Amino acid sequence: MAVVASLLLAGCAHDPDIRAGRDNTFGMTSKSPPEYLNCVKAELPDTATTYVMQNQDALELFVASTDPNKAEGLVKVQGAAGRQQFSAYQRDAWYDKGRLLDAALMCSRV
Image 1 (tube, rainbow, N blue to C red):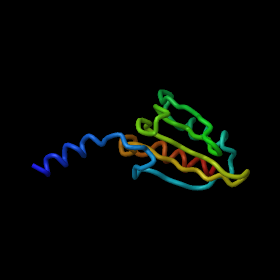
Image 2: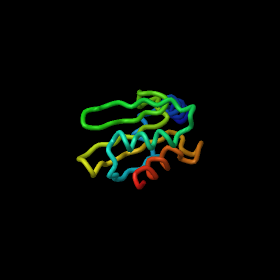
Image 3: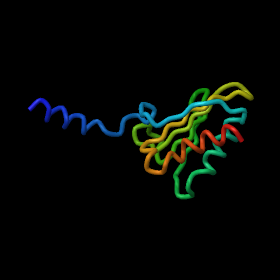
Image 4: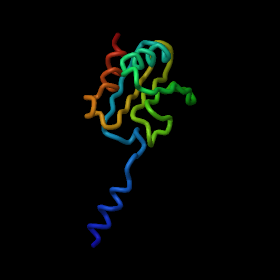
């Protein structure tokens, strides 16, 4: 009985904060935050709904929703001029082979 209850409770804990997931990547870029996020955005499908938000000292690109519990993706960039740090998170990255994560890495190098 306890096992069944545990499984039911675990099933109700869906849609955690995207930043808590395992599908992520991190790195540095010399691009400005707007330039970097525009590059990432350009690599997404035309049908992707994106939102760019300023959050304290970081610029964030959300995919599908600005709620971290519902967003399909999040790319955050912050730091001093010429040395910005980025963090990218993607929910269900297996679905499109990590397209957002690949874009975040590719745009950091170009």
